[in-house]
Image (cartoon, rainbow, N blue to C red; front, top):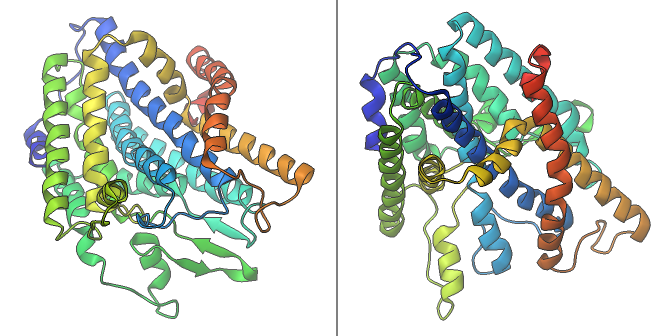
Length: 401
């Protein structure tokens, strides 16, 4: 984490025309490609949530009881939210380079409010036919929306202060874990939104589940904004890649040191006698709600390394394909969840419930098969919309998807 602080003294330099346009396209396409990789991995978790909903996954996962395939898949998809939120902060910085503070603030407020509206008015009700109680699930889209609104204020801080706030929230928020409020406490709803994953009672029998407490994510989006100067056109690709690799491997190394010490940053891991697979699962099972320090270190670290490798290695076909998903992330998010709900309710109507009140696959293999089967059908409309965004820049609302 120390290397990220080194950017605090960097000033924002004006863009120059001395850098070749292909290099700039590569730099930005790799960001979209990493975002696209996140979206592709995320689909696997949403497949599980749809077809394996009758087998709830604890947080962190219980290595003694969880199906190993689900446990390892859960670890793989744990990279999605941290990388996406960090890239959101980075994207805001890149937007701010060519826009005034007022324009960037307006964009953040509009975009953040739109994301919150999507979560409350569309995404939440999508789950009502799967989860029986009328619950608003305040998940990652809600979280990003809140963080963007807060970033409209935080981005005005001097860069050292912004990075300091980000590091403090990411590294120190676990010190607040012992603070637990009860529903009858006056600050309970606010604390549930900030740090304590819980259920808040709403009028008319509705509930709100604060799935993504926002405190650590404010730190993540701030640090994503903070590394923005590394992606200026006047920064040589080799310099940027070296910084990303140092940062990434440093965070991964910090994770292993802290995890082996087993004293801070998450629930302790344990050895399952005679079962190295479940022992490994215990080691890599970290708390996501709220995202612990040990959850964020390896996920953000790997994200930084992959971003550098996408730019360093000639993977033009791969990055171009992934960039399609990353170029229209909100469209893909809304579209694939809608498709999954249509499939689920169709299956439930045709075959009826086979696991309590829900319908689901009997084994995880079915989830994996359908995951790969849906990649191409979901890719094609996303590619169409991504091209539409590039072609019709005169349609202002398209940029919000």
